[in-house]
Image 1 (cartoon, rainbow, N blue to C red):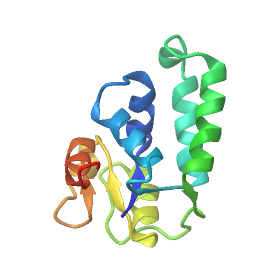
Image 2 (image 1 turned 30 degrees about the horizontal axis):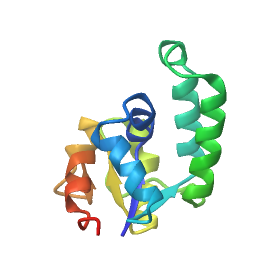
Image 3 (image 1 turned 120 degrees about the vertical axis):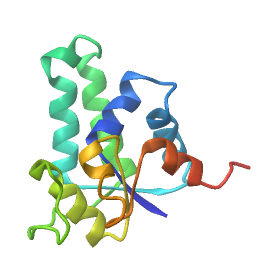
Length: 137
């Protein structure tokens, strides 16, 4: 199983070690699913973690380590140049839809603009995706 975890999921995993996003990142590290990322996605994660309102909650060195770790953990694929057939109400999310479609991956997000597209694309909330993973041995 392949999944694109939205930047909001990857950032939430760092900020709260007990929620579904953190558990998803842990399950990915255990090999329970393949993480798909791109340069745009990794850049968004890094920019978000360095934003003033979040920077005070996380050490800058940890940001660097986390992004490098994600780069190693993920299958980093090229960003898709063409717009997706299905578009989000937020055009800034379209690159995620295109990446997930090109990589035949489920998009995992907490973003309501993306979750509203459930009928058209494979998108799940972090909790829904976590619950769909096979139980750990």
